[in-house]
Image (cartoon, rainbow, N blue to C red):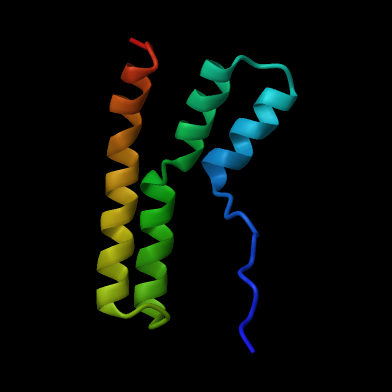
Length: 87
């Protein structure tokens, strides 16, 4: 017997914060900007990843992937905000 496909949407920080700020009355542009900024990880995530690696919770391969993801998403914030018209 086949299992029915699940229709549960995956929401990330950007989606949740966009919907929240739209609900609070912000414009779509402002809400999307705040969602983009919520998706940046930056220094805090790198510190947590280093602690996880030191404790042996993360393998070196997983650590490298997560560091790359943190750096890429943080670097994407500025170009995305420029596309929305922020200078």
